Image 1 (cartoon, helix red, strand yellow):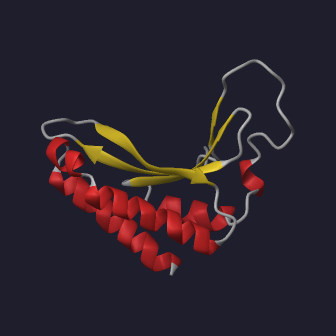
Image 2 (cartoon, helix red, strand yellow):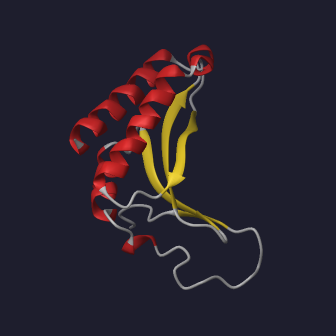
Image 3 (cartoon, helix red, strand yellow):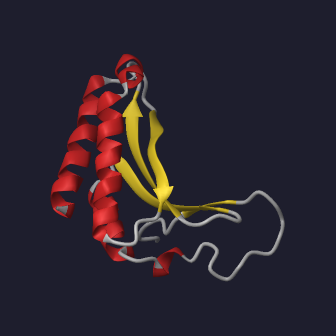
Length: 130
């Protein structure tokens, strides 16, 4: 059984990649990010992401539910350069929180309870990081 997802890659060609491509386990603060992601796995993702030929980024995603639906939608709030330190992680989490809180279209399309859970989760995450 797998403990967690290490990261996500996007392949766009069949070209050979550098050795560092998809080497997510050796990223700075990887253990901290994995621990935080595990704690909030039911409402969000903190996922290293690398597109072929590009540097590693961190995705901050939340799961939102549409009214009268049993499924959830993954909403990507942040896709930015992978943070090299805890302060960079804090900035990305805060940016995700701000983006989620100000996205009026989400409030029209998604269940308010799922939005509230995501907002609270991001707030808790920010508190832990501080």
